[in-house]
Length: 94
Image (cartoon, rainbow, N blue to C red; front, side, top):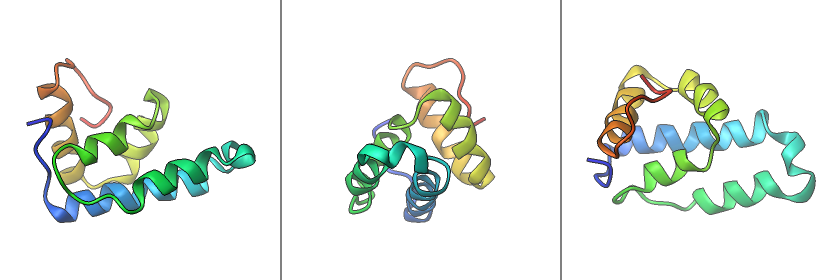
């Protein structure tokens, strides 16, 4: 399941909210282009294989909680399923 792409709607939601998080919450990190680099790495990603998890993996656990609060229940559930199937016992997306 980890390597299975979610629906296009979920992927686009996660991508958009991740970019929003980098822009709005992590502006201090952009002092050296950090946030811009992260945004550039995901803005042109397509919904294939585990790209949604690639986006999630860019954030630390504290930012997982913030990102989860920005997502719909459907998106959180899709991510949680993939995290659990990847071998983790819990996730911030539950």
